[in-house]
Image 1 (cartoon, helix red, strand yellow):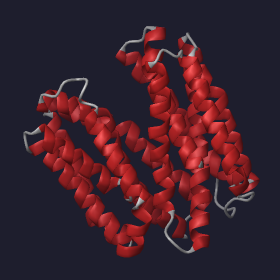
Image 2 (cartoon, helix red, strand yellow):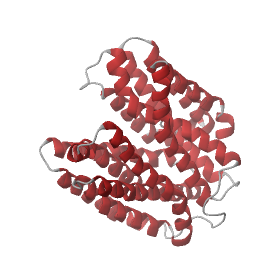
Image 3 (cartoon, rainbow, N blue to C red):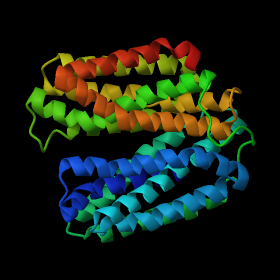
Image 4 (cartoon, one colour):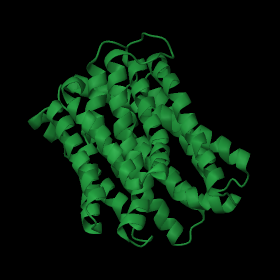
Length: 361
């Protein structure tokens, strides 16, 4: 339920972005800088979240972060000045980043205690939350609800999920140890780099799939979102069935097979001039990526190079950097070459993840 909350919160803001842009009269450049406030809040909060979990426990940190998220979300629906919206986004991002780290720490402890794979299912509920949040908020906005009203409905959903999950939140955190801020090293750094690549692919699908389908495959702008929809749906299905797959095939095979499948999906999308094949490729990318990140989080929970309170925030932060920096890098390569060439570079990085599966899992 806590993973679902994070998905609902992120999707709610994504649905409100066009309204915020229109309300403040922002151009694309200013909007891009504004969106960095969310990422900055998340990245700065993540290392602190690990220390807070150790000191106060998962229940206190997750409850507090969720309540702050609920307090910030309505402001995103009505604030009409740039400085206030930037501040609200920073607080919203910090709450989302704190919750993301804390819930992964709890998930690692629960999975370790159970002795069986659970991480893919946990992350699957983030994808479900994204679908529920986007459908709810976008649906209300489509039928004429004001942005503030839609945001308040999302808050109600989040609070209901928190109330449902509260009894299951662990009152303790991971073992103490290590400094508040630490440079990832050893296996943690290696897993973080792989996480960076996979999140980079997810960011590429979010930011560039629609552009590619309109410019290179002749799809209408209104239809171009089907690429990301295919990616998201395949990822959700893959994660909800992922724990059984991990139990049957093993973590190493899941990372290698998933990375090769995502690589194939990108190659099909960029190489065959058919929008139907491109949509199939997007789905293959989602299916391939679906269980790699959960396996990486399970692996960081088993390592002993760094304490979990430091290692999990480090892994999450590197992943977020992939989402933030990756799409911009793709745009730079596309500007000097082509979007197809830039996406093929991403495919090469995913092939590197596949070749690293022996160490990663």
